[in-house]
Each structure stands twice: as structure tokens, then as C-alpha cells.
Length: 81
Image 1: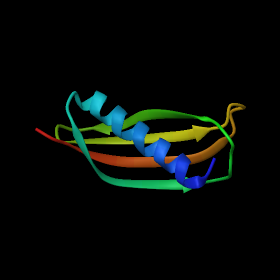
Image 2: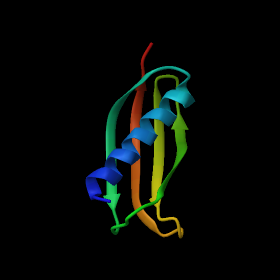
Image 3: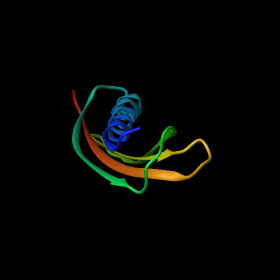
Image 4: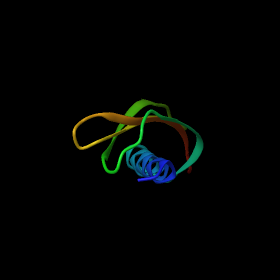
């Protein structure tokens, strides 16, 4: 799996989770991705770091099936009304 494919999976997961958490559509304001190593496959785990009335702050990790951390990401999403 390429670095860009991992980044795309992280961003897609962050955007979908932010929409669910906000209960509305959100717009991606910023994202920071740290690639730690390469991997052929894995899964994304997303968490809400903080939420305000207008912003949702998210974090995510891409891990191999064996549990090794491949990449970290953090993002900010604006809640659209």
C-alpha cells in the first residue's frame, strides 16, 4: 500500500467520523499526517479529541493487522449549518 493510499484512508475515516460526531456535514479545515513506516495492509482507528459547537477535533491511527503503528493523523473539521 502506498503512502498516499494510507493518507487517503485516514482522511476518509476522519471526515466520516467527524460527520457522525457532529450529527451534520462538516468541512475539513486542516489535517496533519505523520507517516512512521510502510505497510501492505491495515486498519484505521478514529477518536474524537475534542468537540465544540462549531468545530470537531479528531485523531486517527493506521495500524497493521499485527498492531504496529504505521501512521498518525489529526484533523479539525468545521460543522456546517
